[in-house]
Length: 247
Image: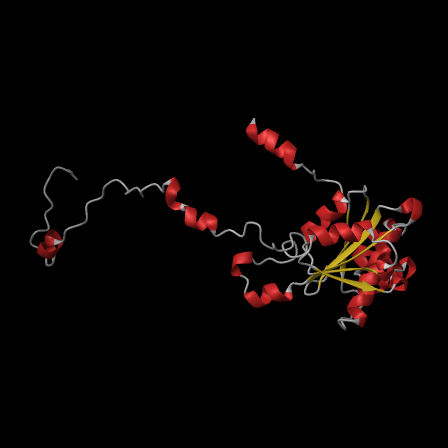
């Protein structure tokens, strides 16, 4: 067949309609106009919650798959983080144990840190947890004001503080309760932290408060346990930050 010869189907039915049919011309693909950097307006930037109460970076984001923007106001109100803490006495002063839980998440976080007299590690940890309520032993308010509680009242003035009896902070009771409510995958962790006296005592105080005051009872094998240290982050002072920014 010679491709240069005309098509010999003019007499066939439907040929005229075929010839009248116009096919669209193909051209280069249309390119979208590039987005300018000004699309992210200053008004959106100003709407960010700078300086306001933030969501707990540990007890919400790690266990919740929903983004913060898609969560309703009711969900945010139900996400209440409660923290219990205790501190050693005498030579163990500045040894702080912390237990934190979100009442709507089955995760319990323990922490024990050897802090300084400024309690920077403890205050930083509390700022990360962003608790609604902080619980501590009632003996901290007897006699001279406890330095740790004074620091917390100064830096977390909008948070509620509550005392419970000192006997609620028991290492043995905390370890026993954790073995009952934690999932079996957390048992090796319990063996590793069995000597973390103040972290386990804080867990005992926290679970006692949840049971006696909020009537929250955890079933056996229902809680995931995590242990966090004070390592892995740095604290930068304002003066050092200003010097680096000026450079």
